[in-house]
Length: 94
Image (cartoon, rainbow, N blue to C red; front, top):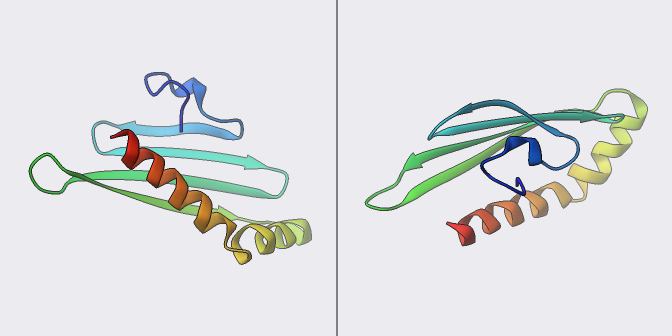
């Protein structure tokens, strides 16, 4: 997700580092006019030389504009597609 994984300041616009607990947890947060959100990556050993990564996300969509935005992002399935793509890119880079 970061342009430079060694530098959390290179996170995409809208995201900031909430916490990092190497080697197993990275928590990001962000907000804009229509939502507040968090994305947490958790890593666990999954056998010899293998790692399982989980991504959990939360969001709040306040107000009428937030409800419309939620319908567009979550209701359309777009969020699922983006998160799966993100996890696929992480797996390919590993």
